[in-house]
Length: 210
Image (cartoon, rainbow, N blue to C red; front, side, top):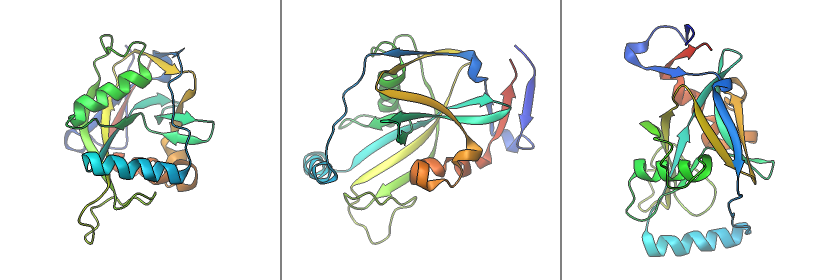
């Protein structure tokens, strides 16, 4: 293993994240996974039905970092060549955050859905976003005038090992995007993803050179 290259200043009282070169990872493909092709109206109806049956919808998403050109890059899934998403998804009723996120990561980024070949290291929760209704508006805090929010999205830092094999469904793309490109780029990446660099500002990145 090569030398470490710390960036972002001091160790910030132990908030150090090791990240490894993109070239340390293998990227393959697997069978496509189905997506709901629906209008916004139908999606709202489906969310209302789910809420009536199960209550608050909780989504968990992973912040996965790699190094490229000595700069941290965020791994994003791209849907239909236009929509960017953090790997993750909706929890099942009664499912824990950690277990559900590991299940979603395995489904979307591992070869087999049994999860036997990967043990995802889910770290701290970086932030939470709330949706007060069934529309698209999100808040990075619990709105004081909302009694029954409809959705909560939680972001977790997931630490990658020195090497790993990723297998991405054929109808998705897995991209490494630099943090400097994502920062406050709401138009391209949306509210949550464009805010990730700020959530990571408390960390120092220890880039492990290859």
